[in-house]
Image (cartoon, rainbow, N blue to C red; front, side, top):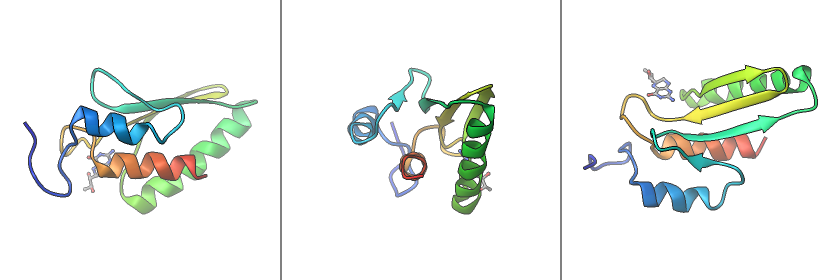
Length: 98
Ligand SMILES: C[C@H](O)[C@H](O)[C@H]1CNC2=NC(N)=NC(=O)C2=N1
């Protein structure tokens, strides 16, 4: 069951269809959409995180993420709504466009 309206959590099939257009993003069992990015070194990973942080702040929508050396794991979910919404898909697309 989901609430109607533009900010509502999306159904899994709808999320999976949207992810079909994005490379490497998966829908986890627990809810978020996620992708792990790997870079040449920590400096490049952190530069990427800085750019994502600026995007996220501009969007008012923020990733759950972790970094280990050259790897950045990003999970996107709308906590306020308890599921994946358009905002998460939009942020994933914006990250891909970097
Ligand atoms: C008030 C403010 O807009 C909310 O707390 C926002 C901030 N960033 C957010 N980011 C994410 N990923 N999920 C949220 O529910 C969320 N809520």
